[in-house]
Image 1 (cartoon, helix red, strand yellow):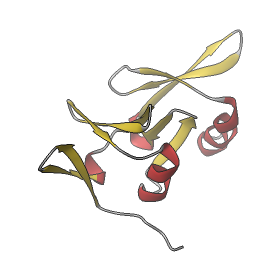
Image 2 (tube, one colour):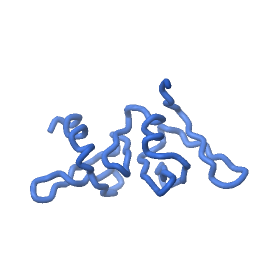
Image 3 (cartoon, rainbow, N blue to C red):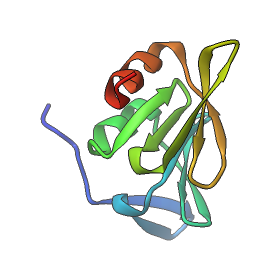
Image 4 (cartoon, rainbow, N blue to C red):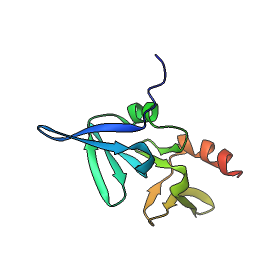
Length: 113
């Protein structure tokens, strides 16, 4: 199947209401049970999808850093280490997220470490 990349994601926020979220406004997406929580600005919405579904929808401005987190590259601010091993990422809004071992290598390659 071809690329599912989109500029807008339609999110059912309640019965009879669909919210349009511009992909450009999304800062991060996190797994939330059978849903994902989409973070943009000061808002969060739940969307019935998996992180794998979201990887198909989101473009190359985003990177998966953990089995539960996808972030927009421009929101990455710091790698945080403990005992010399990078295990967390700090975002522009000072949110700290785990850096998963399976995704660490790709991030390290992208930033030249």
